[in-house]
Length: 495
Image 1 (tube, rainbow, N blue to C red):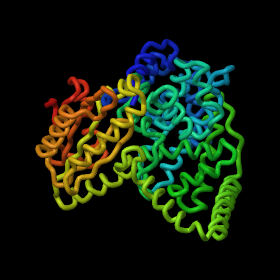
Image 2: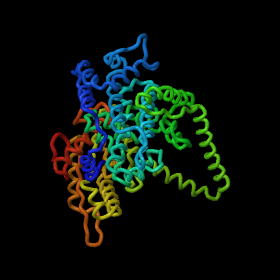
Image 3: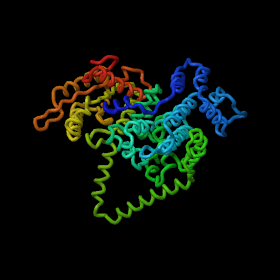
């Protein structure tokens, strides 16, 4: 979540990536189901460079049909509205913000190489799946998933280039960003997308673009976006066996992986040409996957040799494996379930509740003004507060409840068998306990922390999917924030 200081810096920056009024108008029109195609054409046609490139793209081998298009209308009809808007948005950003490296600043050429590769990777991955997904919307979110890097580059200048350094793995980049500026670029990108008026779904996909899919076999549109950046890293960075090992469970059989990488590379030159970006050097997909597998196999064999040579450490290894298993499921600081485990457990409870017509409630908790604790008392005492709150939440959890840390100072409680009323009572008791007892005591200082809470339940909303229910609880938590904090919102009003 973006802290107040960073949000103020973003709002005050005059060099943030911006869109021309014509593109903003197109975004607005595209989200209006009653808008006519002619209105969108009229908004776009004033940009002759964009018009020429859209027509050119529509006539490439990938999109070409029986005849060439000659007008912007024909190009938009062939490319599709969502893809047209996405390309117009991206092209305008690349043109206004630049696509070449600047001294002591973010390498913009590499940025656009990775963004374009990610967009095509997300779309090709979605097309390879058996279920039909909105591939053009997926393209948009993947193209913009790193747009927050441009915003951070604008407000931080050379200092941001030092934060990013020579890292290419965005998992590592995000860690450095959180330490350096208090938020990662996916969160900043979602904030920027909201300012441009992009859809809530697109903003959510951008915000979660650096997570990992919760399921192994059935990928959603947002999860295709999550994997797209890692697929781009396979093609852009050397020694990519680490990336391959991280995403291997979601890529299917070896022949399908190679075909996916080839299809991505086949489309790259056309899109890159539209953005005046040199496409990454083409790699042999089979060779890349083979070398990655070979490197992984070498590492595995080396580990086995170590085990064979160190039989006396077998007991220690078993204990280590148990700790690793715990680390995968639990948050290391609080000992509660981590976000990935929470997601899996909530999906399972949601499916069971729907299948058996059982009550189910979800409580979304955000500790208030937590940055102030870290700033005024230090991160050590901030961590103590998080651990104390986790202990309180565990103590209050009844049999069958599932509690976990969703991220930062956000927590979730899953309440099987509870309706909206009983879950709200639980949330209000939690708020009352926080008011009554400090979370941290040290020296002569006591720290009281309040919470803003949102509650959703199956009896309080018509939810077809678990992420809809989670999003509702999250939105109600924000209503509690806006209503003054230290309160619970279980409907449209806070209590």
